[in-house]
Every structure is written in structure tokens, then in C-alpha cells.
Image 1 (cartoon, one colour):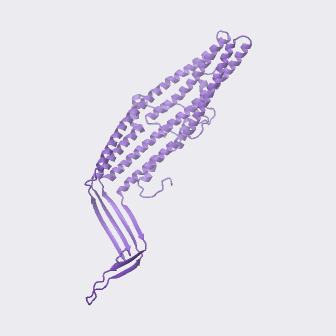
Image 2 (image 1 turned 90 degrees about the vertical axis):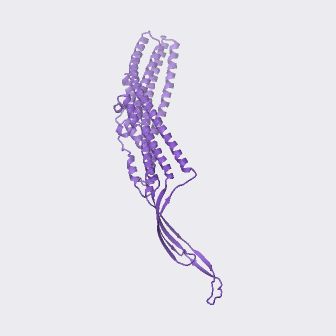
Image 3 (image 1 turned 60 degrees about the vertical axis):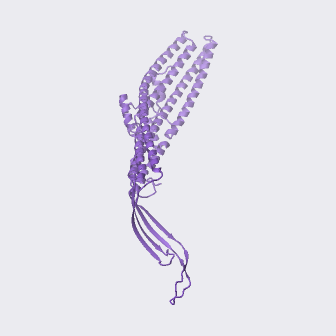
Length: 465
């Protein structure tokens, strides 16, 4: 009934077979198929469209109009005077017309208080913010995937540990019963072994329930049910060596901070956009039109027109609407700056927390390994002493319980060791496909942005929708 310490736990956690799925395989699958991540990518593509929408303010607006119909006209005209000087009676003039008209109008903005330029810069800031928000979701999904993977792996190990414990308890129960029948032990020993056996059955059931839940979580995050999983290493090779260095990297690269930074830029441009309502606007309008049988006086059958008109609009007083909008946008800018400061402090806290947790996980793992080795030696010794009559059945049961608990703690420590390293990598903003070298094509948000930025027309998306 002796087990080989760390070798036992490794046998529980390392799946047999050459085709066992690795953590990097699971992360690559989540990167490709996770619905939350794909939804955020679609959201960013929609944000990209703000830029061509803003650039449209520089371009002319062209409208074509066409109308046609039927019209009956009856004009009553004054009679005037006859050649002999007598008054002539009034007379009527009637006609059935088929009027139609066609026109083309072009409007070009020349100056609108720098509104268009600020709208373009605001849209670009929103795109940059959206890209960082996508990075934040990507980090969250990859961390969830790593946590789900290690959760299944740990729970598989805990189930196997409880099964080994249950097998031991069954053998001890049978041995105790034989010794009782031979008169070597008392009914108390039999009852104690029976009680621990039933506790082992309940512990195995709880472990199997936890495994089923973790498997369902794995399927939700990664997209498939887990198969054979292999024990991964931590990602310490990708982490900074000093805590201060980790904090500095987090300040510079954490997507939560960068998102808040670009949101502040967009809020600043919103102030400039609101202020544009206080400036004069300058524009030009050109139009051509043809009207056929639209003269109800019946004096002409066709009229052709062409014009170029410049206009200047100077706001004088609008009831205070523009001023209120400017003040409102300034308050929103203040809010964005406060949120940026909050993002920095939250990131600092997250990095420090992740750092000390990662460092602590190393100590816990080493301690758990030593505990298992010592507990195995203790179980073997207590068993020999019990056979010699120097220990009771309860002593054997307690030592076995200690060993099972130690093995469980080692499995949890191995899980926490890997998850803590991924958590720290996420806190500093470097948990991404490139850093992990995942074997999957990269989703580059610049591709869609460049496809739509200068699009002047067309309703189909680059994906053909």
C-alpha cells in the first residue's frame, strides 16, 4: 500500500498516451473559437466603421431627385379690352400636364469649426480603445482557459487520489474484519474502519461532482469537452524577475490602462466637437435641374437651371444648448481622467497581488511535495507498527487520512502554481497569442481597419456579409 510520493501525483496528473492535449493546444482552441472573444472582435470591427463615417464629413454630399406625375390645370384669366375699347369678358385656359423634374445637388462643407477633424481623431481614439479592450478580453479568455484546464487536471488527480484512498480503506476494512474474527482486535476497530470507508465513499463522490463541473466549465470556455490532459509547466520564463519591474511593465502594457487612456483622448475630442457649435460654418452648394411641364401658368414647357451658392452661417444665440453641451463634455472628460487614475491603481494592485501569489505558490508547492514524502513514510511506519501491535487501527486510519490530504494539497498546489504564473502574466498585460507562441493564426485588427478606413461606398462587409 505504499505509493511513490511525487511520482504518484505525477502519474495522476500526466495523462497517458502520445496524443494528450496540452495547455497550449487548449489555449489555441479558445483563441480561435471562444464566443466571448469572437463577439469582442465583431464589436471592434463595428467600431472601425466610425472612422470612415467621420471622414465622410470631408467629402461632398450628392443627392439626385426625380419626380413625375399627372396634373390638370385650369387658369382663369382677366378679359382685358377689345380693340374698340370695350371690356372683354374673362376667359379660362385649361391643360392636362405630365410634369416631371430631375435635379442633382452637391453640398460641400468648407469650414465647420474643426468639427470634422475632431470627429475623425475621436473615432481613431475609439478604435485604439477598442483594440485594447479586445486585448483585455483576449487575456481574460486565455486566463479562463488556463484556469479551466488546470481545474480539470487537478480534479482528475483528486478523483484518482480518492479512489486510491478508497481502495486502501476497503483493504484495511477487510483486514480488520479478519483480525476481529481471529480475536486480535475489538469491535471498535471494525467500526472505525467501517466509518472511514464510508467517509472515503462520500469524498470520492464529491471529487467526481467537482470533476464534472470543471469539465463543463472547460467545454464552455474552450469549446470542446476535455480528453486526456498533460501536466503543463508554469510560464515563469515570460515573467519579469523583480516586482518593481512587473509593476512598471503593467503600467506600460496593461490593456485596462491603455483603454482608459484612449477613452480620455476620445473624451477630449468630444469637448472640441461640442465647441464647434460656437463657430461659424462655411459651405458651398451646386445644383442642376430640369423641369418639364411644371409651369402651371402654361407660359413655358421646360425650365433648365444651374447654380453655385456659397453660404455662411454664424451662430448668435441658440438658447444655451451649445454651451450646455460643452460643459457636459468637459465633465465627461473629468470622469474619464478619474477612471484612468483608477485603472492605474487597480493595475498596480493586481500586479502586486499576482506577484506575491505567484511567489507564494512556489513555497506552497515545495512544502506540499515534502509533506507527501513525509506522510508516505509515516503511513508505512504506522502500518508496520500496527502489525507488531504497537499501533491501533485508528492510528493507521489517521495516518492514511493525513496522506490523502497531503496528496490533495499537492495536486491543488500544482494547479495553483500554473494558474498563478498565468495570472501574473495577464496582470502585466502580456498574456496573448504572440507571447505564448500559440499554434494558431493571429487575429490582426489592423486588417479590417485598413479595409474599411477609406471606403467611399458599399454596404458589404469585407467578410462578404
